[in-house]
Length: 182
Image 1 (cartoon, rainbow, N blue to C red):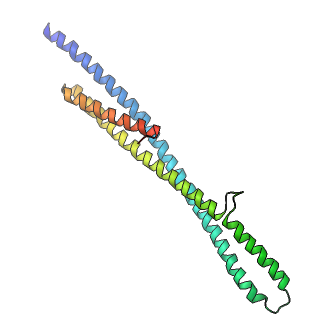
Image 2 (image 1 turned 135 degrees about the horizontal axis):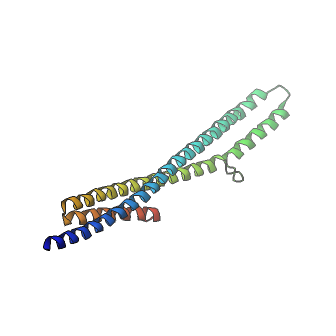
Image 3 (image 1 turned 60 degrees about the vertical axis):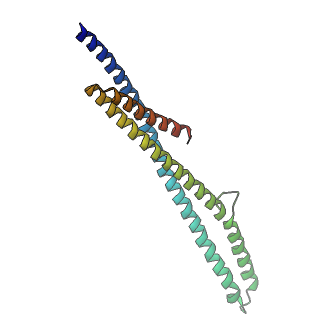
């Protein structure tokens, strides 16, 4: 009769461990999805920041070219009788140089592009940090599942607690990352 009672107790314990494993597997699945989303966002933000820096560099090259031409134009105009045309061209180039430096209305001046690129880099870095935390949370959940599974086979209570602790740590890390805490 005692063996029958022990079997019932062991079955109940195994069901609890199985529920623990199922809960950790659910948390793992959600963490993996969030981690994949963070990784995708990091890649998108990386491309965005690279594009903005390329745009910034293109503006800088155009601006530098016009500055050079603006400096050279007065030398070239000396004595050919087209001083008025050269002066108008020089004014137009200088206006373009100023406009390219800062264009708040389009948000595409060099100053604005630099600020946008830095914001995109910061968003990329944040997404990469979140991805790293999700990876760590996933690993803790996976190890917790393995340890809790081993508890069923060995019947060792300490493994149940170790698996539960690892699972709780992974789930907590995942949750705090989703909530933006820590």
